[in-house]
Image (tube, rainbow, N blue to C red; front, side, top):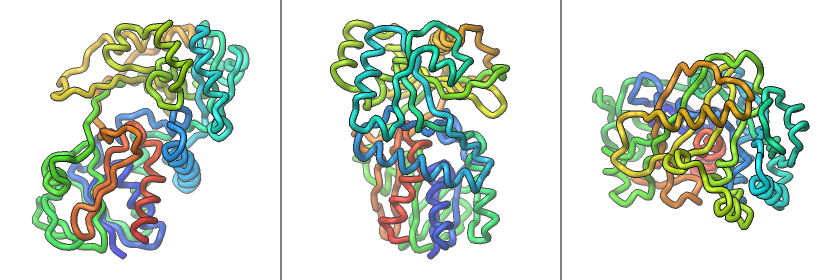
Length: 374
């Protein structure tokens, strides 16, 4: 079988990975020389803790298994089973964590409510003031800026994979065939359109105007090296307001009794933080849903995140060396893990995982491969 994959972000690359792993030939086409979208502009977190119970959690847990397995074969992914800590400061925040630990799927996530001293034993860099912490043992991380490149190098070594960068697919010209902007036609047995947040042009033409996917913009930043290990990913209690696993009476009480910081509320923020292999910290993020998006980044969210992080670390944040914005595609029904649609004979569109993309992409691609009989 010959598979044409359009898009070299993490969703497209994982489709290529599964196809090659099952013995097939793959041609992957990317309109940039290399992917430059949301697959690189994220935390690199394999985030289990906040996922909704049911299909979303099952997909994330399967993806976590796949990331670890692939990471053993591709060290350049930088996979590490670091877990995460959410430091807690108030009784309202602790109550949400207690409700999470009482979930029937808590053991699958690796939830445990820790004292502050127990949390610092796991992550000594957290020297600030907090009373307890929610531990999620199953959370993990990879290096987002290098993961796709490492996977591509491994795929190229198989001899059954071709990468074509700097080419934009313009049209479907037959069953499982596409033409790029160089005029070349690529024919296979299946075409996967994994175009990320690129939802106009050919995607709109093929899927129609009612595509149930929206674009979401975020702001993030990265610091100079911290100078010591941050041994876990770190979140704050605003992540309880964002992720579906924490919904319930305790969260309602948190929202009523402990209103969100005005800057965080305005920009729909949470803190997520993970240390890169060079020692720097990737920190975010915001969520912007209304179109048209702003073309600039604003400083208030960065100032808010800096205050939160410094309070947890009990020390000044290293110099911020990168700020950026990114855009990802999210299903308008946020309970859906991904939008998978056959748009022409032999052509499937796979998009809209939202903030789950880095976490769930290996399992999303595996499901596509299973459904198409690869």
